[in-house]
Image 1 (tube, helix red, strand yellow):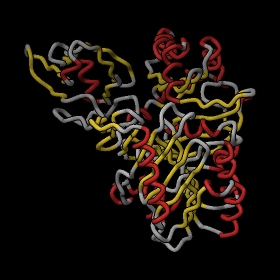
Image 2 (cartoon, one colour):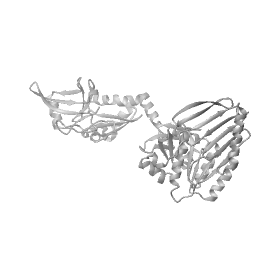
Image 3 (cartoon, one colour):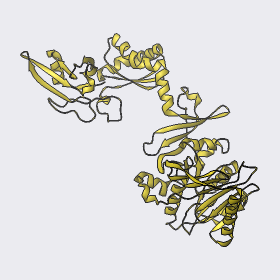
Image 4 (cartoon, one colour):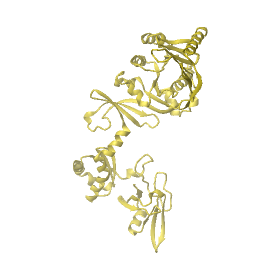
Length: 474
C-alpha cells in the first residue's frame, strides 16, 4: 500500500489492503545522503517521462506523481528528518464489482446529481469514485476531474485538472467555459473548495465530490459554517459512506418545514433538512437552526432517550390502560406514538362512550393525564404486518399454525379430567411469562407454564374463544 522512508530509520511499509493491513519493518535504513540521492533519481525520472510531473512544489515539501505512484517528499525544518512517502493505488475496480442493489444503482446512475462520497483515510473512497466515474464515462457525456494531486485512475477520455497549477478562480472559469456534463471533485478540504463546489453545483453541473469523514453524517457537519444550511440540500442530494472498500451507508437529503423531533409546540415549526436512509426511507437525522446554532439531531437517540426518561411516555404505556379499566369502560390497547401523544385501541361499540358527547369525556382524560389521546378501532390492530409492535392475529381454527407474525405456535383442544381444555403453545422463551391476550374485545392475562403452554379450563372462556376472535397482544 505504501512505503515510508525516514533518514537513519528502518524502512517500513503497509501491506495487504485497507482495513486488513499490517506494518512490515525492513532491515534496511538510509542515511541523509542516500535519501537525497533517491530524491534526485525521482526528479530525473520526472524529466525523462511523459507520465510523471511535480504536482506540488513548496519550500519544504514536494508532491510528485510518477505514473500511478504518489510520492511526498518533506525537508527539514518542516520535519525533523528528511522523509519520503510513496503511495500506490491498491486496486482498480468497476462499478459492477460492488454488486450494488438495483435501487442503489438506479439512484447513482439516473437520479442522483450531487453526490458526496465520504469515508476515513484509506477506505477506498477514491477507488469507488473512480469506478463510479468510469461507469458514467461509458455514456456520451463530457467528464472532467478536479484533483490535488491528480491520482485518480480514470479513463483516457476524462480530463484531469489540478489546483497545484491554477487557483480556484481559474479552475472555475475553465470548467464553466468548457461546459462539462459531469465534474468530480476529489478531496474537498478547505473553505475555498467548499465555495467552489457550491458555485459549480448551482450552475447546474452534475457534481461528485470526495471528502474525508469518519461517519456519513460528518460530511454534512463539515459543510456547516462554510455553506448555508438552507443550501446544503441544494448542493448535495446523496451521501455515500465507504468503509472497508464497500458502501456502508447511503443517505438522501430532503428539505421540509416541520416541528423538529423532540419539540412539541407547533409554533416551533421551521425549515428542517431530513437525512434519510435510501433503502428503508427512515429518517436518521434532522438538521435545523436553533438560535444561532445549527443542530444535527440523530432521531433514534432522541426517541430512545425520550422513551427511557420521559415519565409521560412510561405512564401512558402502563397507566392509561389501568386508568380506563378502573373506569369500568372497557379493556384497551395503548401505543405511545410520541412523548405527549398516545393511541388507544378499543372495541367499536365502546368508542362513543370513551370519546363522549362533543368529545367532552376524552378531553377531560387528556386534561387529567396531560397527553394528547387518539381513539381508534380495535380491529385496526388485527391486520398489522411484521413491522408493527403488536403481535396479533385472528385465530383461524384448532390445531393450526399461526402465521409468521404471530408469536403463538399452536392452539389445540384436548380432553383432561373429562373436561375440554384449550392449550396454547408458545415458543420456549415464553416459559413462566405473563401473556396478554384479547378475547372478545377484553384484555386478559395468562401465565405460561414451564413448557411455555397456557391452559384454559373455564368453559365460558373456551366458548368465547370458539365463537369469537382471539389474539395475542404481548
